[in-house]
Image (cartoon, helix red, strand yellow):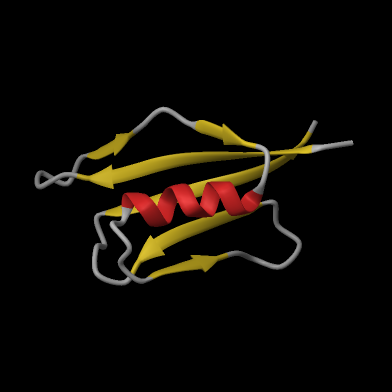
Length: 75
């Protein structure tokens, strides 16, 4: 059984409205992470995840208006 990693970008605009961008699918967690890092232009990022969860959040230390949600699913 394989896995797919679905990453979705969320961004809060200057009016406080949340924009949700179309999700992308990757066949590895590393590819999903690299996508997010590139979208943050190489700035420092960190990942948060609860134990035993199939969901993660990727955030940037310098941009609090954007984050990425990663969902790991079995296929």
